[in-house]
Image (cartoon, rainbow, N blue to C red; front, side, top):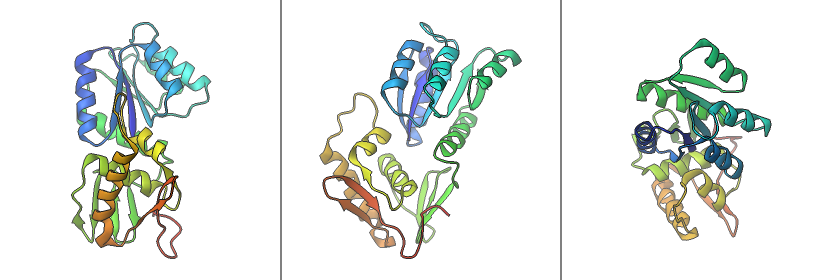
Length: 229
């Protein structure tokens, strides 16, 4: 999952970035509205955390432009102005949730989890694939109730494959969802992540198939329509 933070307070932006990265998300951050609008035009994200008081372009204008492009990207608004009028205006423009500063990081993380699930189609928080169970809330994978030791990248990769079970996922899609700006991630690096995850999933019987020259696919369970139950 990839998140864009548009926040001009460097302390808040840094705290949010570190917290969300620790939870396995890829995070990019901008400090003004023009940069946010440009990033949203050029790149796909799974969630936007948007401060209303941005320089160069107000947050509400960023939101208005986003929705004018028919984007359904989930948006969590942050603002120091906790007035009913501001809240209503943001929600009317298409925001999905609203938090007033100061806020609790644990509450924001919970709302991020809810919004990213909603943006992915509102599916269950528990994804099952044979003996493999993945908890999207706790971001923990288990096999027969035994926790798999996965890196943050491996957790993100597993989530992408599980939510697209039976469908091919290209290397470019993996990079877009796992990697941040400025990261030099080669095709070989993606192959390494897949190889490591494949080895850890082997005892569960879950298989990651390579679609030669195209990408990867989490094989469907025999007789099962989907990984989402």
